Length: 72
Image (cartoon, rainbow, N blue to C red; front, side, top):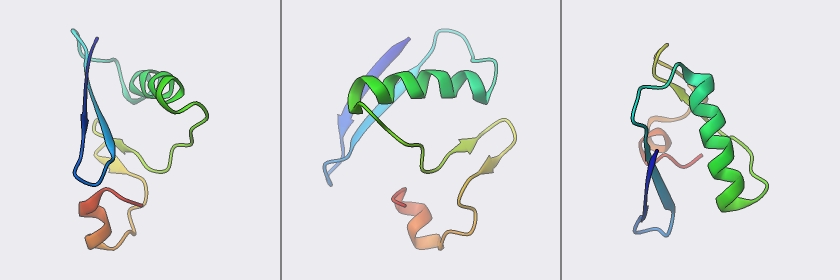
């Protein structure tokens, strides 16, 4: 697994994770995300998500302006 860390102009830390092989599913990705969140933030809570396999995201009723910023 390769992790690249960048910081956006607004100070938000962005972790880009690549794996040598495709992950089995959304749940496998969540295991990695939970582990990284714990390592970088301590206690963390998932606020939104996107399941690419099913093309389904949480907070579907968000106003379009907020959706594009990624800030909930």
